[in-house]
Length: 80
Image 1 (cartoon, rainbow, N blue to C red):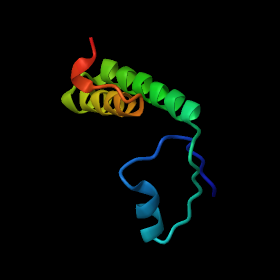
Image 2 (image 1 turned 180 degrees about the vertical axis):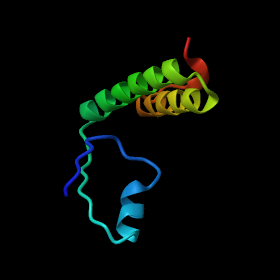
Image 3 (image 1 turned 180 degrees about the horizontal axis):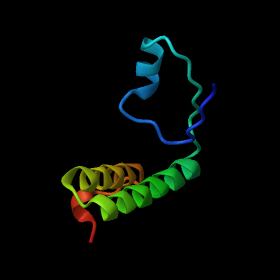
Image 4 (image 1 turned 135 degrees about the horizontal axis):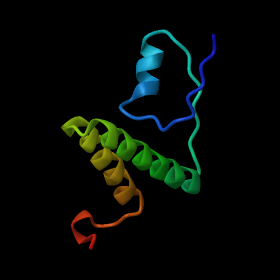
């Protein structure tokens, strides 16, 4: 059975899938697609934090925000 996720991938997931002998299909997003996906991810993580309110969930929010800050080439300590 084929499963489709249509999500951002991190933590070398494609490499881990290949090493396990399974197949996957991925593509590189355009800059606008990537920014939109990051924003969607931030919203998703905030919603998860709202439900669980634990340290792991807020860390996921922070990680997604950190990716957006890097992508936009902002200086993390300069965000006012």
